[in-house]
Image 1: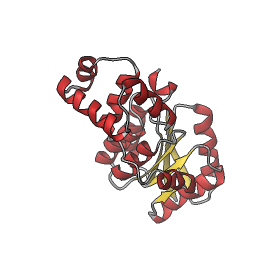
Image 2: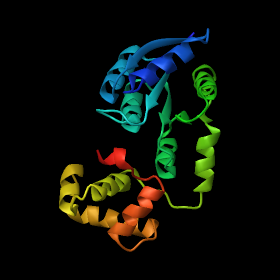
Image 3: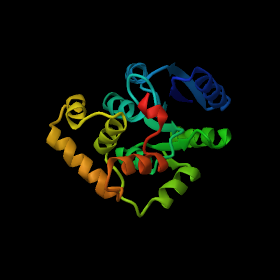
Image 4: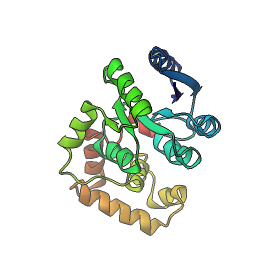
Length: 209
């Protein structure tokens, strides 16, 4: 029997996932967390065999939760579910060492079976719809986590100084990231950068709320 912790700030989705996974005779739901901070504490305490994390959660997002929780529970296997189809974010998750990556738009039975394979057989599962996005953007340069943070700041209308203060870096460093963003996305103005980033799923309205 393998134990699962589910972390998602949408209660209905979390409950549905818990019910679906609990239907397997070799899986048990050890706990459900409503945000990233709660998930970290729960994983640290329970040391589950597998943790299923939403990418966007209050307190700490899925990537931040994974990085911190893995320090306390390195043997836990981690899977992330996301509605964000950005190739850059998907790459960032995989490069960080996530064991499973699924889109929330995928078939529920396929997601649950993938999570079961991760928990029981220590497999790394990348859902076919995720892999299709990665393959489509394989030739493009991906953005680093810091560049994505700077991009979000630009999208909010923040100056280099404001972004620097929020991230704890110098304004010169932020300007360097801004230059790299322009180069990687092959644009020459802030307006075009934001349009391109929106079109490719690097940012959306939810990111800016």
